[in-house]
Amino acid sequence: MAAMNCRSVRPRLQRYADGEISDRDVQETRAHLLDCPACRSVVASVVSVKRFFADAEVSSMRAPAGFADRVVALAASGVSGDADDEPARRLTRWLSVLAASIALVATGVLLERGGVLESSPDTLEAQEWDASRREITRRLDPSARLVPPAEPEEDAPALPPPPR
Amino acid sequence: MLAPATAPEAPLADVHLVRAALGGSAPAFRTLVERYQDRIYRLAFRLTRDAQQAEDVAQETFLKAFRRLQSFRFSSSFFTWLYRIALNNASDALSRRRREPALVLDDPDRTHVPRAPEEASDPGREAMRAELGEVTRRVLVALPAKYREILVLREYEDLTYEEMAEVLGCALGTVESRLFRARARFRAKLEEMFPDYLPTEGGGGRIERWRR
Image 1 (cartoon, one colour):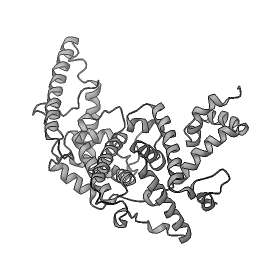
Image 2: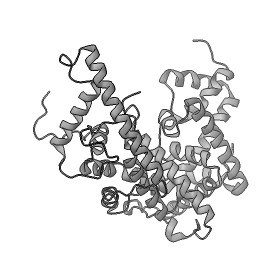
Image 3: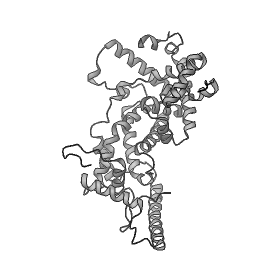
Image 4: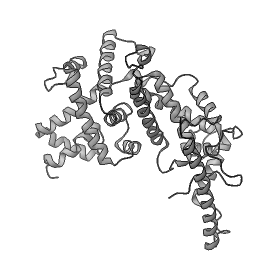
């Protein structure tokens, strides 16, 4: 292992101070630091700032009591969290319905063309969705409904836009 | 691989919950809120240093997340996506606050950090720690938002470089250079505002004396 010089070590000194490098890089960097006061002082400078951030008080803080209840109630009542974007909201909703329709049509066309309709009924994504649905049905009460984030058409499954 | 019936089940994965919430499931959404509410609230508090505002920011974050669930890409992790929304909300809240000078950072009722009862040990040490915390807070508030944010993500939230890149929506190289600059700016601001606290090579700064 060739001894490292300052130029090759410099870019990783901050990662070294943050503990964000591989064990092997740690060894090499440490070997260099032992011989190089200039690089040592770069590391010391990073560490000196890190020490200002011990913040035990905030680490033990919790969200206020009843927070989740309020958020879920607001979500259920259709409050969006955006103060002034009703037009944007309508647009997004419209676009997502459009995207869902296009995706459905496209999937249908592809499946028919490929002749896979019988042999492979599910796309990978649909399988993942089924897995989620099964988990949720088993472990949560699926009857409690929220206002869905966007309103899919009655017969459209609540799928996200297709993967890019 | 059947687990014994008494073994506690692993928590439902975020992706399942997100999908169910997309379909309108209230319990799924609630589980996500409960899972991340403390982290998001603390992040908001660290960015705004105001209990009321932190609560507002956290609430808006979850509501926006809910409304925008459709834009969530399952390739990234839900919590980094949530952090990103929270950062934007906090930065909006802070710029609103700058326009309304009536809300001051120094109101002790709003910025007071409740102390966990179990850690009331050495009162002298407590006082010094609180003082240092206040210095850090004031220096952070004086930094430009992008430097404050990255320092909070790294030093308080303990995110990895990769997670920060996801939250901030930038390349790893940008994370590294921005973080480095943020630390340099922190030192410079500290020197300007509280020169006594500046850590020195010989260890003569106040922080070194405390930590010994």
